[in-house]
Image (tube, rainbow, N blue to C red; front, side, top):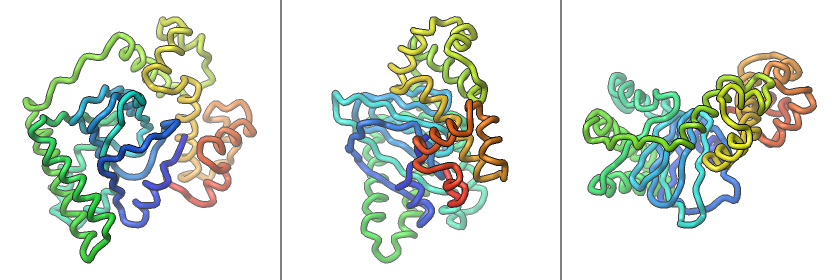
Length: 287
């Protein structure tokens, strides 16, 4: 599990993190979490996005809304440029900016446990893209009053999204998943429910009535990571929560999460989180 550090640092400092028309490429797109809420907007490329149990096949103009604490990973191909915009923010960043009942309605956009998809038409995209560009410009300049402008622009974006979400007949119907994607959804659901158990690939195969070699192939093809790496990422995610919110010994946390030994847990945690469990607890880091 990777904690997205730039996002967390920005959210802790200001409460908002923005990127517009980002086109950078990573050799390995990690399964990760972060603080706050995310509005992700897909501009160009060939990619799918895993959020919790959901797999979203992305088309230009697609927007995903989800909680950063939900495990997620984008899986783009390198055949075409991968371009996207996104804004991460904390709910507290907008508190006091509007009446509580309006804020509550806007926050309801992020209630879906596995993310929500909104598809913007070609005519609507210019307005949406302008919001991201304006947010990014204000955040970069840090001119007088920029925090107020950021809150105003973000509020306008979220209101536009909320209005769109309420016009359900204008939202394009969700494309039915392929047979492979449906099987990967079933694998994700099983793993997300049983990741603390020491189950084998054979157990997974029997539970889902799928060939174990097929499971390995289709899961990697759709998500871009192996079943084993995903399971470990889920365990590390849960470990971070337990380290932050409990005083339970590291050995007991290791046992509860299905690691064979505390040493294996510590090594895995350091590999995915970049530090030992003890150091993580001492620093009191968020996800």
